[in-house]
Image (tube, rainbow, N blue to C red; front, top):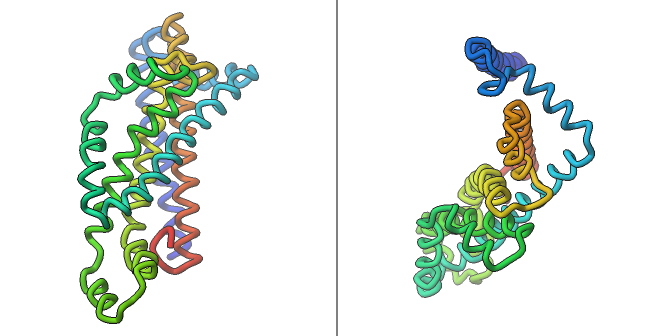
Length: 257
């Protein structure tokens, strides 16, 4: 039974995917206008055509570097500063207005403002960092504040060194929140990066290829680039989950332990 369950789950997911592709194909057939809604086959053909051009891969790599760069910096700083903010109230009170302001600003406003100060090619990376940082910061601070008080009291009674308290009590408590922040940052990072690429005219990039496809009314290529974004995003998410799952099995504890 254990061997059948994963297989059944895969079959179910494939079935759901086929359902939505067929629904898409039916809608395209009913509209009967590739300019309005290209079919799944037409979209796939567009991807194959794009893949024949070396610039296609250059654009994907450039966007990936911006996504990874922005997400990595935001998660790394969010973990460190969030841990400090959760442990130190004055520091939290200093940082919180900045984090709250970034969270409340529209993404478009952030992109336009940043584009005034730095080169267009770097704008997506910086904007991704600014938008994803509050996610990590908030989750880590929450993880610190939900740490088991009894463990902290026990550590205090036995005069455990502060470094060990942070490493052996706070860090394990924060890890599930950090994993959640990482997954959210990856999903959010893709959306923000591509949007910033369009508004900042960053080249080479997937975002600008989307924009050109829209300008020249190449709807099939617009859908093709969108399909590329979805596939890349899902692939990165699955790889990240796989790595986290391996860490859990290898260490027998919560993620990132």
